[in-house]
Image (tube, rainbow, N blue to C red; front, side, top):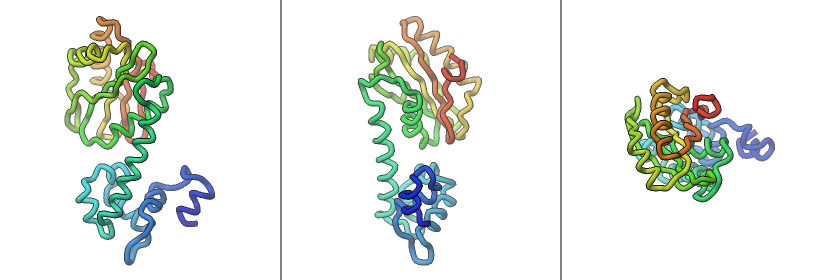
Length: 215
């Protein structure tokens, strides 16, 4: 069964990464059908994450991937991002952890260096804004509580959710993650701001400090 027919018969969740990519690419190239082309791309870039992170010019160097096919791949990713962003817009209540995790994963998963971000919320836990504050290396990012407090006061936020990605793909919080979370909680408690969660973004999952009982 071809990927498109399989999707219609069973649903998109039953398709492999290569089958979903094949639907986006639509056609193969000489000597390689579309499914083989998809598998070649995923092997070349070590999976969907690597493909989405790769520079456009590098992807287009692959046989059969010109401007048109790259544009199709990029458009699918952007549609996914916008779909999830519409589920967590300014002024909406942040009350569904699964939607928050999906939003943060699409925002941060593609980064090859560590990024620390904040979701600033009002006293009814409605989103004021999402802001990426600190940028580091593949190993970590320096987070400064004083700067977080300043931005929290600037936005007049009453609550906050922290998030950062692990470029390694493993979402298990480190001891350094736990220490900085405690420092941030202590600093923000002085201005009566609640820390609702700290989410660590990995390849397969997003780990929530709140769900782990670490706050």
